[in-house]
Length: 126
Image (cartoon, rainbow, N blue to C red):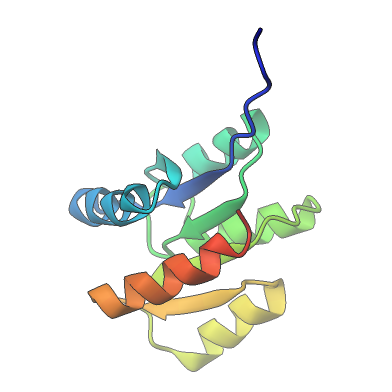
């Protein structure tokens, strides 16, 4: 008998290939299923096709950047928790992200303790 599978997945929106591989590896070590999108435009399509438990997004990306992606998600009524990883250190940008409803902003480069903290927070939503 087939039983329904409760799939809880994370959408990782990141244009840096090595960083996306590293982040996916950290998540998968914790048995967190991850889907990767290379920019906000691809991620918007993914969100239309599938429901994710958590979204992790970069800000600076080609096509549709992270801020635009997050704004469009929130304007569409998306309630999925969003975490941001970014090299942007401008506190005004961080404040804008928090006002949009972002759960947490992590400044790159992400070191193993930061990944651990982020994964602990993500697990709260899985």
